[in-house]
Length: 225
Image (tube, rainbow, N blue to C red; front, side, top):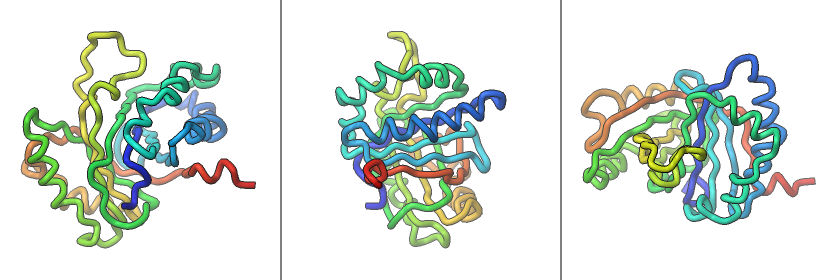
């Protein structure tokens, strides 16, 4: 299975251009390392949009889904650094998905990523999952390395600071991830396989986009000399 582990945290956001230098410095010099250091977090990958929104995307892989509701992760959320507090307060258009990796086919990860956000119809989850399993076959597409489905947990994916009782209709959305060698290959597959009203049986497409990898950090990198 190309994706490490069974759980994934997806975060995506925009940032004002005036705050962008500090935002990227924070991610690159503090935040990714801080998160990957949490027990049972395996790796993190940072992306920037080629076509789509929000502009920045990050994927964190964990050994199990339960890690994303663990005491260690909750402690990190409850005790952010001052730099984190300042930077995160400036996020715009934030997406946060705490998800299970339910389908993962292919070998390895690519330098480009396609992402499709889907809202399942209530009661049609099994039908949607089966339809996507047929589509997520990287061997049918040149330039595609691996394809995945992650399914958000509606309770855990609520915004971190959301007040009790506040509705979060997108918290249970699913995401198709397409790892490819370049953005053109990714965009071609999105158009061919995931476009149009009949593309999803049992769900509705909310958005799609393509991203390029900025850098990645694995647990083993933290102990490298």
